[in-house]
Amino acid sequence: MTLETKGVPALEAQALSKTYGGRAGVRRSAAVRAVHEISFSIPKGSTFGLVGESGCGKTTTAKMLLGLEKPTAGELFYDGKPVAQKRDFAKLRSSVQAVFQSPSSSLSPRMRVAELITEPLIAQGKASSKDAVQKHAPRLLELVGLGASSLDRFPHEFSGGQQQRLAIARALSIEPSVIILDEPVSALDVSIRAQIINLLMDLQEQSGVSYLLIAHDIAVVEHMSHEIGVMYLGEIVERGPASAVVQQSKHPYTKALIEAVPVADPDAPRVRAVVTGEPPNPMNPPSGCSFHPRCIRAMDVCSVVKPTFMEVERNHWVACHLYT
Ligand code: SF4
Image 1 (cartoon, rainbow, N blue to C red):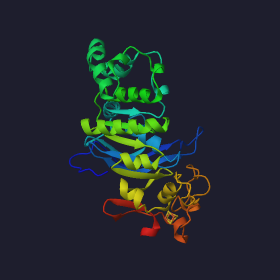
Image 2: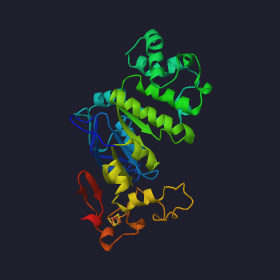
Image 3: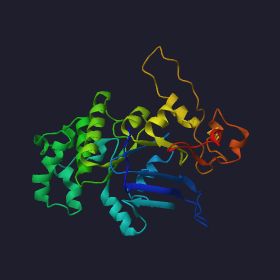
Image 4: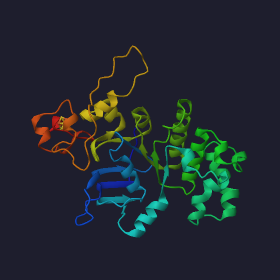
């Protein structure tokens, strides 16, 4: 997807890092580099997709954007303003919402739908309980394609796809400018996925909300995203327009991720196993390019010199010695 981007981005990360542990002294602990100097921006009304193996730092990145984790270094901007002070993080938490993989575990089983989807509104003092239930709840249900007859029901009375619609309605209740979508369709039946994806895209078109999309399904990420960042061991190793990153990927790791996607056609050529071994230990990342122990294109320089992030085509960036 392409998007004309003008004005201040909804969210922007500049050299954002998060390291856990690393204490000296009696209670010393090894430093775990979860996210290291990642930069990207999410223009208003657009979707930025993050892909990579589990443990690559996607969830830590999402937590920082939600204001649940404080960055160790780097800068975060919300609507053009730096998020640095305690009150900035509080504002971030009240402005950025999230939809998670498993709707059944993110919806309280004891609350009726009307209270459930309007709880954030009431918690933030944006509506009285009466207004929330009588005015906002029917409107939110209609937005996500569920009827007013659902208002008095409990989440367990709904199918998985309907529960995810409820989770989306709840996230939309405070009219956030950004929603973090963390694997929003991966727990759903294949037949339901397209409906939820289309709903999310329609809602974006109507409201101008921005998304950070985390998903392991490259096809879903390409379909929904305007830009994609590929993460490996806490770093973004390739970033650019979604079609360029997927159709003309540069980094050997991105190519490996794409080639590992199963193909439905039984006559199609077999998938090449291009990434071998496990991701390295983030407490002791490899020297040079952190992907070099697993890279089939590795050269002598790769284990010694860290590649810099270079713009190889317009707005298409990659960190790899093959392009320097
Ligand atoms: Fe592979 Fe070297 Fe490029 Fe790293 S820098 S991805 S090891 S070719």
